[in-house]
Image (cartoon, rainbow, N blue to C red; front, top):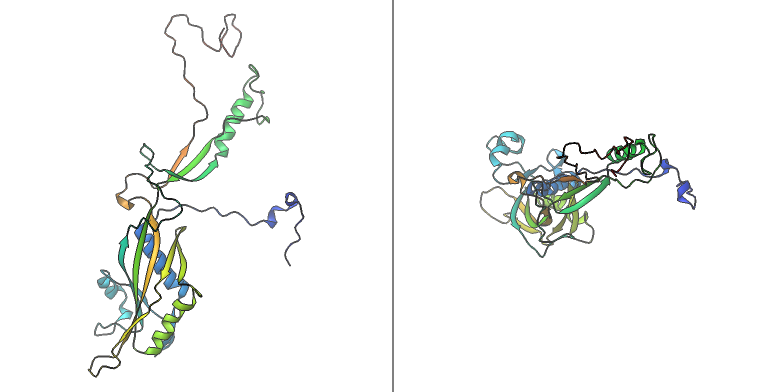
Length: 301
C-alpha cells in the first residue's frame, strides 16, 4: 500500500520523497540524432524473427559509406562468397532540412553574448552555496563598524551578496532529418514478424520519442510500408523480400560541432561586490580606514 501522507506536507519525511535527478548537459549534434534513432530501434524495439537456426535477433546495421568497415568487422553478416545473410535490417539518412516551420518551444534570432563564451538561452540558474557562504562569513566576522559585522563566524544575518551560477546555451537550430530503414529477408513470414513491432509499439499513432545524452527528439513513422519482392519471377535469382520504412525526425543541434570555437555549454557567475580602490597621489594622504585622531573608522571624515 502507498504510504499515508499527512495533509501537511511539511511533516513528510525526506525518505518518502523521490530524490531529484541531476542531469548533465551534453552537446546535440547530427550524430546525436543518428545514434538516438539507431539505439531506439536496436535496443528498445529489439526485433527478433524466426530463422533456420531458431528465434534470433535480427542484425541491424548502418548503411552507406561504412560498408567496407562492416564487411571487415561484421563477418558474421556475410557468407563465404561475400553475400549478405538474411534476415537483415539496415538504415540510412536520406535528407536533412533546416525547416523553420518545424521548430520547438524556443525559437528566436537571438545573437550570442559578446564575449569569448557565447550562449544566449538560459537553461539553469543555481546558487553557489560555498562562495555565497564565504561572503556571509566575511561580513559576519568583520568588526562592528557602522552597524556592519558581528565579530563572529556563521552569525545569522541578512545576506545581500548571493552568488548565482547561470548555465546558458546557444539558440538551438531545428532540423528535419529523414531516414529509410530497409528490411531484407528470404521469406514472407520473416517480413511479417519484423515489421509488426514498428506498427504495434506506438499504438494507434505513428509517433514516438527518442532520447540520447539527455536530448529528446520527436519521430514520425510513414504509414506506408512499401513491399518489394521477386517471388513471382521465373528467373534463377535468389528469392527475396524487401520492405522500406521511412522515418522523419524533428531534432535540433547546438553549436557547430568540432568547428565551433566557442563552448556549447556556458557557465557564468555574477559579481556581487565591486570595489574601486582609492589612488593616493598626495603625500600625507590619510587612509580611508584611519581617522585623524588615529581611531579606526569605516569612513574618512
